[in-house]
Length: 400
Image 1 (cartoon, rainbow, N blue to C red):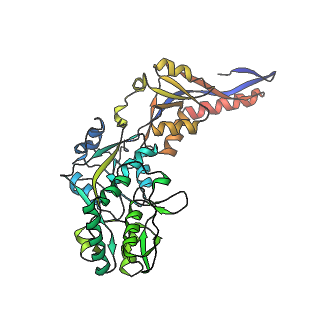
Image 2 (cartoon, rainbow, N blue to C red):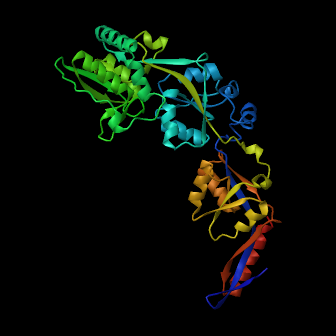
């Protein structure tokens, strides 16, 4: 079939055309691919977020920090199918957001900062009760003499209420303003206390506006140095490097607190525990699995992204969904991924490429029937012979 169209005042002819269907691309931030999905996980995802017990014994993939104790908690408490390890918390949470894991497990001291950052509105936080698990962490020391002096000092500030004051300033609350962070005049008459930390885990340790280390770890270490009449020297390094560095006499102690385990205690000198935390399971708020979306009617009443100027806005209205306009597809896809809109409507070819590029484990294409919308596109030419040859070519390939 040949079609004619006018363009720039000149007669042009379509040399071929084809009919295409529209598809909706839906971001499912908590689902897994069909290859990875087990029946218990998919059943769990159809429920509301619930409590931490919903994730026990279902074969979930639970992300944990490398070098910590929470891998054992995931395996022993939740019977997780796997426990992928991540060095940084941001990397771990991005894996959760992208659907590569089903949940992430952290100590509660980090949770308030995650919530206050506003970066993770699509997550819920499920607290594991103290009677199920409590984690204790402490500083690590190179020699017993320094460890014993630290423990004596710590028990004193625990008894007089100073420790409670420090905890209440840093743990489970918003980070203090710059002017509210305590500063200490350290004399250094008895030398320098060499400390190691990570420098990037608020509220325990981070760099302030002046690029100086601050946080719970830093205040505790600075107060101890003040008590000892010493100055402080901080060296920042990866979490997993701290113990080997202290054992090799590269530092006197860690201001960073490390999880106390029976295995570590055989070779490491821990001080008294100064960070006692509950475990928190971080899970996506959106729990719609791929197999829950049977057809386009799922999107009735939901928000669908449409590129401004595209003819697909009428289809959104026919579906009964709400139109949200975007100027480019990448922004629309990102908002689908983040759950700000429920879907993005475009042609089949576009959605297939998008799903392949962004991950088929978190996007699914849902067909909109031709009865609701069908479009026609084709090439154009002034040469009727070219049109005829191309149409014959189309007929040939359609016959295969």
